[in-house]
Structure formats: structure tokens, C-alpha cells
Amino acid sequence: MPTVAAIATPPGAGGIGIVRLCGPRAKEILACMFLPFSSCFENFHPWMLYRGRVLDENGEPFDDALAVFMPGPRTYTGEDMAEIHCHGGSLIVRAVLEKTLSLGARVAERGEFSRRAFLNGRMDLSQAEAVAEMIAAPSREALRYGFNRLDGLLGRRVTALREKLENLRTQVCLAVDFPEEDAECLAREDFADAVGDVMEAVQSLLAGRKRANLMQRGAVVVLAGAVNAGKSSLLNALLGRNRALVTESPGTTRDFLEEPCDLDGLPVRLTDTAGLRDAAEPVESLGVSAGRKKVREADVVVIVLDGGSLGETGARAGVCPDPAARQALALALGRPVLYAWNKCDVCMPSVFPPLWADGQPCCAVSALTGERLEEFARLLRAVTLGGEQGSAPDGVAPNLRQGAALEEALADLRELREDIAAGQTYDCCAARLDAAAARLGEVTGVAGSAEVLNGVFENFCIGK
Image 1: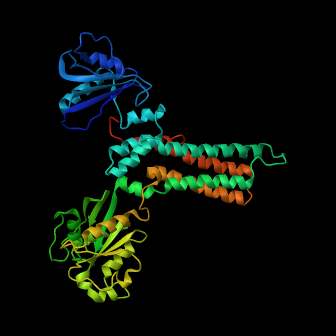
Image 2: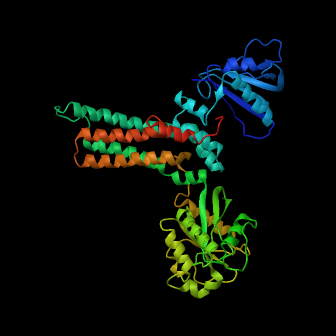
């Protein structure tokens, strides 16, 4: 492979900037551009930092830096690597990179270092993905999930399951190749039980997927309801600052407004939307349409009710008397919903939750005074995480791509058990085993297309 170089530290000024080299000419290029201070220096001793000066194209020093050479295969990528730790000014770091390019290196592509590590067998695909996920982790729990994947826990478990399927396939092939034998090499009952054990293990891996993914990417929480129900006030209360404009005039919010928020370690994006009504004014009508779209795309919909207007009578009604709330509930079909009975400082009904809530989570809150705001935030967090209140088993959970592959493998295994029960021939069962094993292989990168690899590594930063 060609020798590549990239800036490994974030853009902008900083105390230290790192330029990373990888490839067969890493040591040669480093030696051409770095002059050690020590008069006893003879050659770069592996894994040792040397202080010296970085030289420009004229052989003149332009920075005081540290350099290290790391020979393969015991490196991040499995190839020879070198790093120059210079001062972190953007001009200096860029000059160091340009010097490496003038000596024959080329600029690394996005995720090229991690891609080389994967291709050279230093990590599987789930570990490579974990590198980018750890860098972008928005919460401590997301960091823990990413580290466990980087440590290889998920990859090892999936590999073990794939090996079980391969062993089953070997036994099935014996039954196909030697049909004249009196006894089958694998009894159907034992075959079904073995497949069931693998299915149970796959389901265990999928158990914490929702929580892990929400912790990694954050949840989209949309506030919806009637005009003047207090959506913007509730947004401000949860953020702890006045982000949205609040007036007594109906239709103040003309467009949706998104802001990040932390709910006890759960990252969310709170989205305030225009009040749901038939707006005559064109700009507000566009805002209402955008709000409806946001509700349909949300992870969780908070339907904000004007408790002061609905009052005791509204809580005792058999059907929700708020048409905007009914419309929001219809738009949120299939998504978790939380009713927020706002303005409980004006009216806290004796019957609560309202009779028409029909089992949906409901919490009284006052965005104005902050009454019950902490209780509302805890309930919102619980609703967002759904039934998965605990962490993923052993802190191991797949990301979206890996989860999709595991779901497809589970579907193949489910159909395989049905085939076994229906008395299908063993050669047909072998095809199902092949399909399930291939799906599991996609998780670690043993199986999969170039498009999958490109999709994974194009989301990396340059230099990692």
C-alpha cells in the first residue's frame, strides 16, 4: 500500500498538533524531515520519542517537535507508522503535512488508517466502527458501549455464534452426502435445539440495542399541541434558559426550533413546533406543515395540553376535548407518546391522569413555575428509552448497521426452525444456515460488500 499522511488532531490552534504517517516509507520520510537534537542519535529506536527539529523544503528548521517511529505489524494499522508531535498552530501543522507530501506521501482518505487496520486483520469491522463512535460519543454510557465494541466483545460473541452455525452446517452436509446411512448424522430435534440456542444468543445481543443507539445518536423529542398550550415555555424550562420566544399572542412560533438537552445522561434534541391548527396566514401554515412532519419523524412525541383551559371538566371527559392533541396523537401513530398537562399551577384536576388518556403516560407540569419539572424530565427519559430501563447485557449492544444484520440473521434462523419442523430436506436447511452465517459475518466484516465498507469508513474523520 502507498504511504499516507494526515493531521490526526482537530483543526484550529492548540498546544500540540500530530501528523501521522503510515506505510512502507514512513520511516524514510520521517528521517528526511526530522533532525534530532541528540548527537548520539543513530537511528529511530522503535516506540521511543525523540526531540528535534522539523525541516522545510530547503533543509531549514521551522519547529521544535517530538517524533516517534512504530514498526509493523504491532501498530494500529499493522503497518509501519510514524508521528510528528509539533506545536499546534494550524500553520505549523499544515506545513509539517505538506513536507510529508513533498517527500512522497499522499493525503489519507477518511478513515483510511482504521480501514487499513481492518484489512490487515488488526480489528474486525465492529471494532473499526467503534473507533468513530467513541470519538463522537455524546454521553458516558455511549462511550462505554463504544469501548466494549472496540475491545472486541461484540465481535467475539458474533464470531462464536457464526462458528456454531458452521459446525451445524458440517453435520448437515454429512447427512446430505451420506443419505444411505441408517442413522442421521444430526437428529432433527437436536438440530432445532441448536438453532434455538443461537437464536436466543442473537436476541440477547439485540436486547439493549434501542438504549445503546439512543445513547449514541441522541433522541428526537418533539413538543406538539395547540397554540398557547405552553410548548415553547416547556422547551425553555427544560433547557434552563429562554431559547424560544414566548408571548400571549397565538401563533408566535412559526417554525420548528431544535435544541440539544441532557436528560440525566440521555442526549436528546428538543423540537418546539408551531401550534396545530388551520392557519390562514401563509407563513404560519408552512410552519404547521413542518411541525406535522417533525411529529411523524420523532422518536418521542410530547403532546402539550393547556391544563388551565381544559380544567376539571376536560380531565373527566371520555374523549380528549383538545382537537390539536387528538391530531398530534394520530400523527404520532406507532411512536411513544407522553401527555404533558401544562399549567398545573392554574388547574390540577382531582382525576389524574385524565380519563381519556387511555393508558398513555401523562404528567402534570408547570413550565411557568417549574412545578413537577424534574418529575416530568424523569418520565420523559423513561418513555424515550421504552421498556429497556436497564443497560444492555454486559454493556454489549450493536449499532444500527450491526443490529440490522443481526435481525436478518434472526429471521433466517426462525425460518430454518420452521423448515426443520416441516421436514424439509437437509440440503435446503444448509442453504438457510449459509444465509444466517453470512448475515452474522456482516457484523464483523467477514462477509459483506465493498459498498458496506465504503459506507462505514466514509463517516470517519481524516487522520483516524
